[in-house]
Image 1: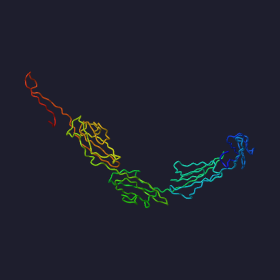
Image 2: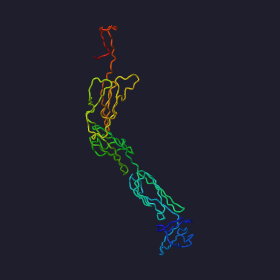
Image 3: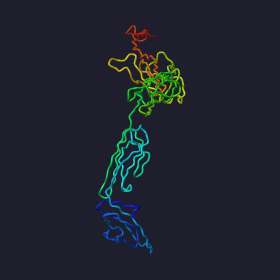
Image 4: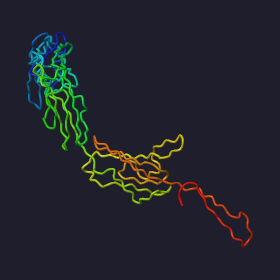
Length: 365
């Protein structure tokens, strides 16, 4: 028989029972079944009835009983909180019914924080006003009920992003708003490097340690908290102290230029990134002066190797969290001059002496 003490049925309906395997079956009262000798007979009763099954298993007669109640189901949802609650308050919703909790189904929002659930009870922590719906279904009839759990709506919102990136020594502004527009009950914590703890806008003087700050707001007996993480980073010293592996002045087209910088320990700067670009000193008309001409190594490395093409400012932008450094180095490249050779005299006979004069435009020797 079903693993129930009482089976609830709708009026004027039938229900098919099913027993475990046995040699023979005898259901009573016989008049309530379409075939009282079958393993899975169909039951129909008009009122409260005690159903009995006698079955022979391995030569032994075994007996089981089941109380069948015929009723129209009723359902009433009740909360242990009679007034509106603060967000996150534990609320118990109970489904009172007359069918022994049989066939109860809950319809709850997906974003509802569910702590625990039983067939006729929910333990929840709503963060906003939430409507709970439940239904009880028997074989052909049902009952439904709805309850609204009202949540007070005080709100504090930190206007900054969840994480604020700052450079060591900078001052960072944090700002918060409240649902009421008032900040009398707004508090910032912890009070470390803060300009104020009771204002809508506060300033953080950054120190080497990154820290999470909390804005706490109290209204109508409810306390709401928002948070922001201030991440503090720094940059290596002397980033702009470039050195050239072979310091020529000037370079010629085709020369290899190796630009190096002071060594630093990467583990102290986990977010550090580099981005190189070059800006031509004398670009051709309609030529974009900015690019990566002659770069032999990726433009994201700390140091750079270039094949010289033309005079240019080599610029490296280094970022580390909220820190930015822009360093640049001008490297002049002098293209080869066009040399004109003039013989004097222009025509000679074999064995005669000739004078050759080489000339070019601009400075040089």
